Image (cartoon, rainbow, N blue to C red; front, side):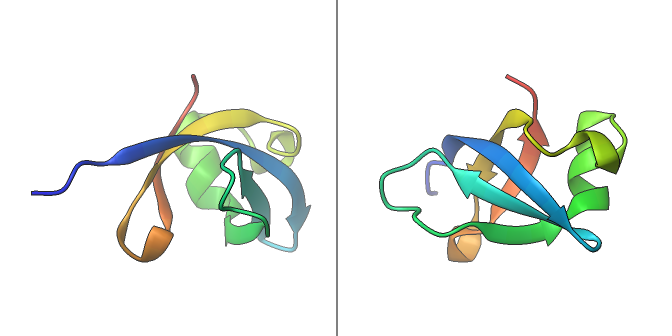
Length: 71
């Protein structure tokens, strides 16, 4: 069984239906895109409110972020 890593992340901007997310981790230099609706639903906010928001997420298989939540 592997241990889940939790990282702090920030939504930089919305690009169409995707959110560009950057993790506050030394080895994550480029933003990644995730469905804005998925993140917004997990946080209980409108997608248009995501840019600039900071939150926590778990690093899953393939270094994909999951389990979005507010700190």
